[in-house]
Amino acid sequence: MMEMLGLNPVAGTLLATLFSWGMTALGAATVFCFHKFSGKWLDLLLGFGAGVMLAASFWSLIVPAIEQSGSWLLPAVGVLFGGLFIQLSEFCLDFSNLMKKNPSGKRSLLLILAVTLHNIPEGMAIGVAFGADSGMAPWILALGIGLQNFPEGAAVSLPLKREGISSGRSFFLGQASGVVEPVAAIISVFIAMKLGGILPFLLAFSAGAMLVVIAGELLPEAAEHKREGISGFLLGFLLMMVLDVALG
Image (cartoon, rainbow, N blue to C red; front, side, top):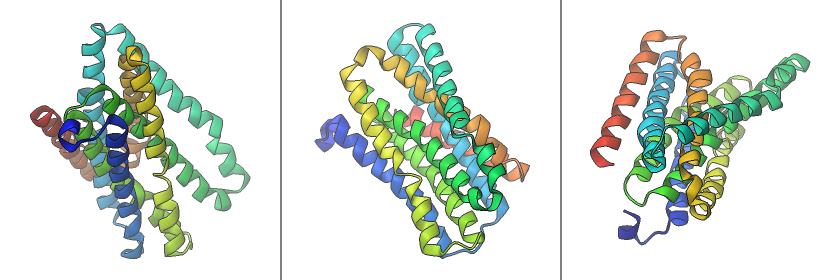
């Protein structure tokens, strides 16, 4: 695919993550159209994003990691360390203490930091995928992640608007939460290209980080309206599965 477009892995990574960042910005732009977003629709979109990320973690990251390593051991270690990385990062940020010190002043910071942190493994996943595969699989992964970035952008900007922050500033902060995605992706693609022997670990590491985000944040957030959240989850999983298997 990249050969057809005349792109090297770095250029492909940059183009793909600009798309995913753009989807975050598009989601954040809903603040100009709505003062509030239906909770049912938001849970549907969050469930959809969780389904997309789960399918992408398996077919685009874990399966290639096992195939490249020829064993389950290194990918299993990668998944474990990826999950621990996110949990340790959240612990270091100490969100709960921030909230206790000044609940009204820190709520916005909590929201922005949470979404920003969760965009890091998504960028890593795209970068590692482009470093490992020149076919359609990295583009499909980027498409799936971009689709689930739309509700993430809205999930930041709309609550900020409800707290009295201007529409323009709410949009700026919402789209800024996605800036780390291209940065993490570019760093990861360079690592993947230079250290090809650890690609299975890097792929699985990205998958483990995404799995923690799904289980710890997206699914619980989508659980308020259970029917909509589950419906979105199934739709997202099926869409990503079809795209990855049919085009990958």
